[in-house]
Amino acid sequence: MMLQQLLEQKRDIILKKWIDQTFNTYEPEMVRFLKNEKNQFANPVRNTIVCCLEKLYDSLLKGIGVDEYQELGEIIKIRAVQDFSPSNALSFLFGLKKIVREELANNSQQEKLIKELCVFEEKIDTLLGLAFDLYTQSRDKIHELRLAEVKARSPGIFENLRRSKK
Image (cartoon, rainbow, N blue to C red; front, top):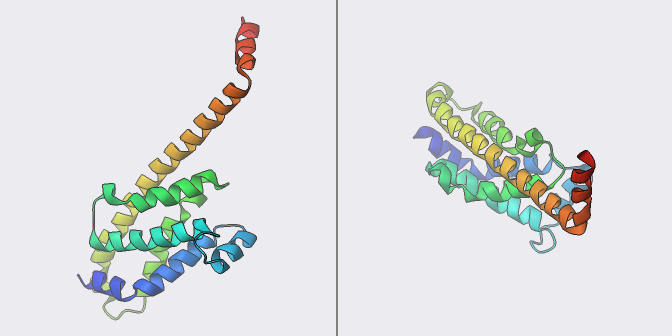
């Protein structure tokens, strides 16, 4: 349990770095907006990301089940509608592993922490798998909605295409 105590002690530092790292995946103009505009109504994306990352981190420390990570779905939905590649959309989870390792690098009992760190990183890997599934589902839903919109706007186009193939 030594790792959990250290991660709880370093919670604010790790979260600040994780939030900044997540913001830095955006274009420079958006990064400035996300970091500077802290009003939750003027910048709901920032508010959602910050709140969800805080809850995700706390959930990782508590060791709750995968089904309990509702916050992950909220972040993935935001990133799915934005112009991210799948790897970039999920990169914020990879970043947490690096941040935690950096924070623990100077610990005098680092060798004792390795087994616990492996267990913690397995939790993050499980989140990555879940995030990929959620991302794929969100993107599929977006494509379905776009197709339905095109069909609704021009119902005759698809019928004409079918007839012309015959």
